[in-house]
Length: 165
Image 1: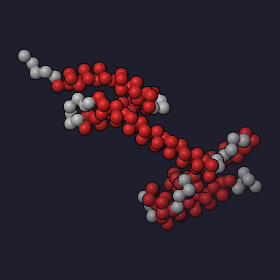
Image 2: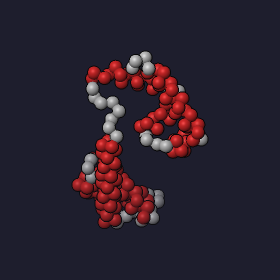
Image 3: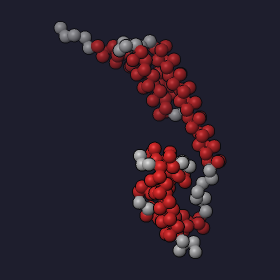
Image 4: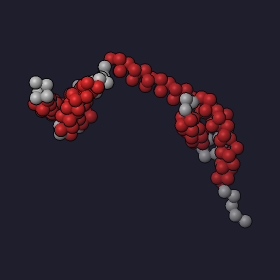
């Protein structure tokens, strides 16, 4: 006689309870993908808390609820930060079709910069970071980040001066 498969009880439990977990998660989540992620995370966490045994259904439902609240808070906070950032920093390129040549010229000049200079310009102008912060991200000393920025700005000035003369 063969040993019983310890996973059989796990598979039976998932088959019996999985749909109920997903239905509950759908009520708590904002999208189908989020609901599926909530169920997966909650079942995994509950299984770990039960030390490999089949977890109590109530524990899984409570975990889905808690994780859904956390996800909603995180999503709302991110949306608030993005909206505040958009209001504080107007877009660099307005959707003005008359300015498409200007946008193309600037984009081409930026693409022509060496990668290390383009990275510093992006972090400084679009990321609004200081040179010490840029140095931490890029792994170079702050004076090197500053000199790359100055070199990039000079290259852009030279490349763009005929277009805006």
